[in-house]
Length: 328
Ligand code: DGY
View (cartoon, rainbow, N blue to C red):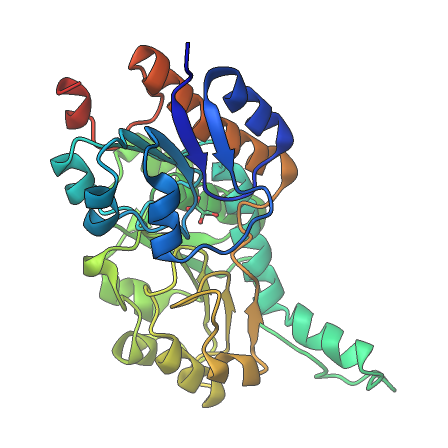
């Protein structure tokens, strides 16, 4: 019997591929070639499923050209690369990869916060360049983390993980803003207090962004919001590029209107706004918050299990548009 055809749009772990090959006729991109939208569409033609990543855009144009497609399984918790409405309208199931990356990503958020507050990359560059000749009282003096106020914008699972690290590990006072307030028990677990966005901006010593990207969250942090922050504050973005206006941030950093920023995600990545590359008080990493081997393997395997579960038994593990299941 012919196996159903699927596409794996980016390189994945060989064991994930082997698992998929037990069930499907797999076309894989193990060479990790960068595909244009047109090439991705061509590759998707005739396929019933796809394992995608955040850089593979699935919109109505792609879907219209690929009527056999029934599921796209994203190897990411974020899914702003999917046009969910178009997928639902065309009866294509979308799945993401939540939970398996929560703690790893929260670890990274905290690491980026600490590296930013304590100027770790800036001072390392200085040392590597051979500029270190003596001790000086204010050399790379940064801002404290312990005992300060941690602000979190977006209080999903990753935000909660960061809150717990800050409150219980570093004695930080935690304030957060979110579309909806957490249940009291969860607030107590995170030792976090709900505040309005204005209060969050004005009181946070370290502001961490962990909200999903959508048209509504585009440029949630722009010039006006940066102007409300403390001049000693740091801003950390591990959510998505586009949530921050990168040009406005680069200017605020250059003019020292906030102390520093740590960015793992960028508007239009992998392109980085050139002004961010020339300001010293920013730590820049290439979208690696979930990048440990065990976590990336768990993400890939969850995406694979969604494909297997749905295409063999109509039982995906983490569906996003469940209304599609009712029509299958
Ligand atoms: C996610 O899972 O959304 C991450 O940003 C992908 O690396």
